[in-house]
Image 1 (cartoon, one colour):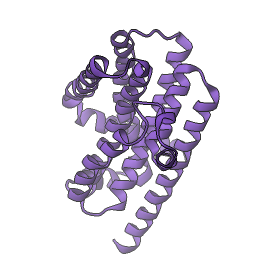
Image 2 (cartoon, one colour; image 1 turned 30 degrees about the vertical axis):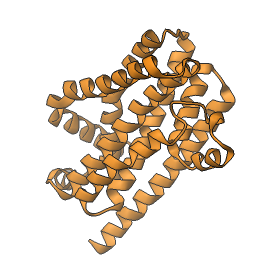
Image 3 (cartoon, rainbow, N blue to C red; image 1 turned 45 degrees about the horizontal axis):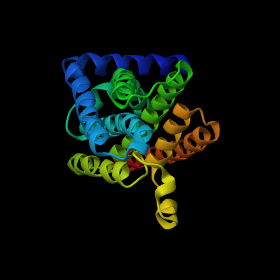
Image 4 (tube, one colour; image 1 turned 45 degrees about the vertical axis):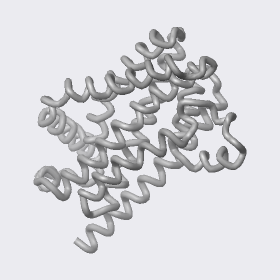
Amino acid sequence: MVVVRLSNIYTVTKYIMLSSRHWIYASLAFTLMFPILWLILLRVVGNPQYMGYFIVGTVVNTSFLVPFLGTSQDIAYFRRGSAIYALLFSNGADHWDIALGYITQLIALNLPSVVSLLILSTLIIGTSYGVVQVLATVATAVFISLSSALLGYALAMGIRNYRIVNQAAQVIPWPLLLLAPVYYPITILPPVLRYVSLALPTTYMALAINGSLSLNSMELIKGLLGLLAYSSASILIARYAVIRGEVNG
């Protein structure tokens, strides 16, 4: 059973990567250009004492935005706007094979952008990190991408109209990135807003990245536990949506 599932996931991953290979270079350019321009702007006009958090925000931005947006819009389109989902399903893949296959290829394509952004960010800001910090941050970014993709998958499976999913996926990330303490420390928020921010997944993403860059194990664990809770909730929502769809058609 495990071998069959892994084989299906590999097939789905390979199919999606081959069918979208023409967009790979364009997506890499997109995921690098805008975060770097934003980081340069922050470098020029931002508060110097928050330069480290600007790097955190840049890594979180790419690790969260691309997987969430891509997964929610593509899965919704595959299911409702094209024959891709039906094609994969008719060839033996189930909902979770398709989900894991898509998420695997998305993380694989997004990983070079995360690594490049981390390197470019340190050059722009003028900060240096050790090998352990870089490796820990890359691993954390992969987990953030997985969690973000699961959030996007839950959105795509939970709403039947893929046009509504597209619109929601374009709106949801911005308050999560701008209202949560992503580009600045959570400690500068008033107590009330600090508690409110703890309900946002991007807060835990920033905690995890900052913990990995500063080698603060407590902050890293707190961030990863928050992401684990959101990932578990996303899986439950998606599972309910799949069962509902199988019952109601």
